Length: 236
Image (cartoon, rainbow, N blue to C red; front, side, top):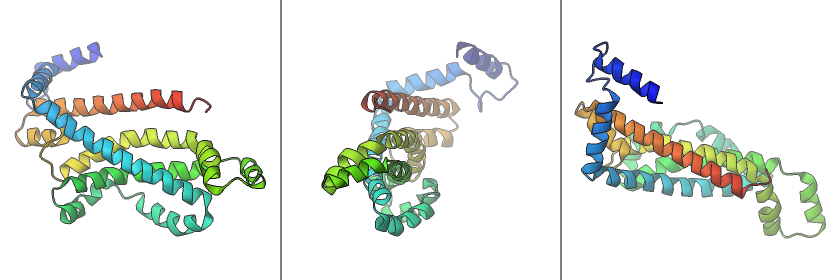
C-alpha cells in the first residue's frame, strides 16, 4: 500500500497526467480532512449508513421469509419463483427514473432501491439452502409429529443457515452498490451525494476521497459480518 501510494504521488506530480483530473493522494488526504473538519463527513456518513442498514434489514428479512416459503412449499414456489426470476436480473439503477416519479426525493425511494438489491440475493440463497436441507431429517420430524412452524424453525431454517449466511454476506456488499443508485436518485446528504456535488464542482480530490470512504465502509462491513457469521454459524 505505501509503495502504491508513493507511485501514485510521483505520477500525479510528474506532469504525465492532468493533476486536476488525477490528483495525488496528498491532495485527496487534504480534501478528506477538510470534509471531516467541516462536520459534513459525519452527517453524510450517518445518512448513508442509515439507508444501508434499514434497506439491508428489510430486504434480508423479506428474502429469508419468502425464501423459506418458496423453498419448502411447492405451491408458493410455483406462484412466486417465476416472477422473482424475471425481476431479479433488473439492476436497481434501472429503477432510478421510476422511483423519482413514484416517491420524489423522499427517503422511501432510496430505501426501496437498497431493499431491491438485497432482497433477491438473500431470497435466492435461502431458496436454494432450504432445498438442500436433508430430506431424511424432514421425514423423521414428520413421523414424530413435529408441528410445521417448529419444523420450519428448527430443521429447515437452521439447515439452510450456511447458505443464508453466504447470501447475507453478498448482500452486504450489494447494499453499498445500490446505495450509489439510491443517492443518485436525489439526496441532500450522503457519501455518494457528496461525491456527485464534488464532481459537479470539479473537486476531484473530494471525489476520490468519497470513493475511498465508500470502499472502506463496504470493506469494514463485509469483514465485520464475516467475523460474526463465523462465530454464529460455527458448524458449517
